Image 1 (cartoon, helix red, strand yellow):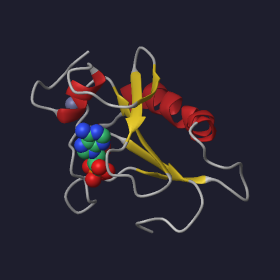
Image 2 (cartoon, rainbow, N blue to C red; image 1 turned 45 degrees about the vertical axis):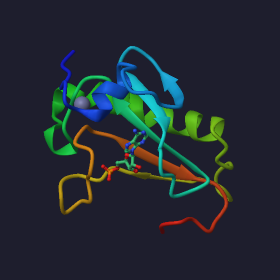
Image 3 (spheres, rainbow, N blue to C red; image 1 turned 60 degrees about the vertical axis):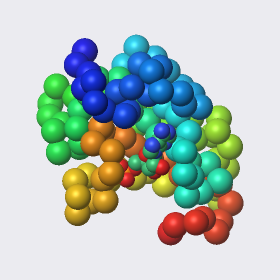
Amino acid sequence: MTHDPNCLFCKIAQGQIPSRKVYEDDQIYAFHDIHPWAPVHFLMIPKAHIASLAQVDGQHEALLGRMMTLVPKLALQEGCNPYPEGGWRVVTNTGAEGGQEVHHLHIHVMGGPRPWFKG
Ligand code: AMP
Ligand code: ZN
């Protein structure tokens, strides 16, 4: 598994920088966003360093599938309300024009009662 020693989210996934853990398995780590935009706001990352969604290809199909299929379970576990009255938003900012600030692939999962700080 590849890591970038200068990457914030690699350090978080490896426990070198503290975070509030939501979930962990051999390939995936999830933790609360430090500046939440919504009552529930956590991030899911691959433990391996992938800079963004722009670097993803066929070899990542199973990993991305696992991440996406974990979203409903973790969203409800963290306090999002059930579909359809509740629900959540999934966002992956990609590149400068996509609003990406941390260049390690991550999925934002946001939910909880409105209004939210952004959106
Ligand atoms: P993005 O703009 O999509 O790259 O989002 C990066 C997200 O990482 C932002 O929502 C930040 O609040 C969040 N973030 C930055 N540093 C940390 C940290 N140390 N722990 C948890 N979340 C962080
Ligand atoms: Zn990284």
